[in-house]
Amino acid sequence: MFDSKLFGEAFITLFVIMDPPGTVPIFLALTSGRSKKVRRRLAIQAAVVSFAVITCFALFGHQILDYLGISVAALEGSGGLLLLLIALELLTGKADEPTENADVNVAMVPLGTPLLAGPGAIVAVILYVQRIHTAGDFLAVAAAIVAIHVVIWLTMRFSVNVIRVIKESGVILVTRISGLLLSAIAVQMVADAVIAFAKGSGL
Image (cartoon, rainbow, N blue to C red; front, side):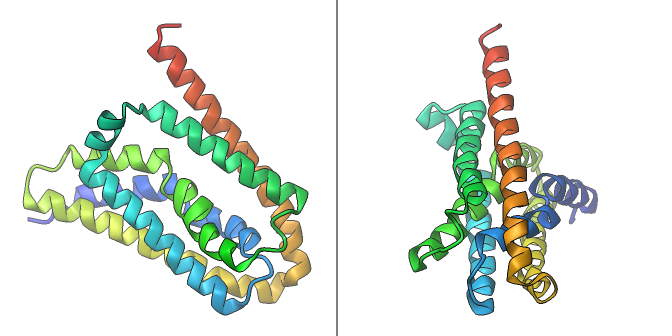
């Protein structure tokens, strides 16, 4: 039987961690200067990439990390450093004139991962997978993963309409603010990774 309680817990947890509304300003900043058609394409690409990464770790998460000898703290630290590089580009304006190749990269990195499918979401999914004992549990967790990515896609898809209100000049402002917020997120991820390493080494 479908476990609606487990579905609710998993969906809410992933919603809070992945924060679809919070991705709107960053999505608009990273897709600045692109046409509405390209923005919509990037929205679905980012959602698909995130879904693929989350699904992969849901199925093989423990095995992948154990095989490579990677700790969750290391994953979080590397994700933070990657986001920091992107944040610096947004703050300095180097991301204002994207190329065609950048279109694909933006959907994959940093939108798809590590912004959406980041360490927090990956760890949460791995933990919920460990709670699967019946077919109903499996359906509940799978449905939660699918549902959150539908919400993510819809959020980014219709955020394109915001451009009509704030215009391109507003997007430039949003870009700078997003760079600041993204840098803060990156620093927090690196700090959490350092704390995790310190605790793990008994410091």
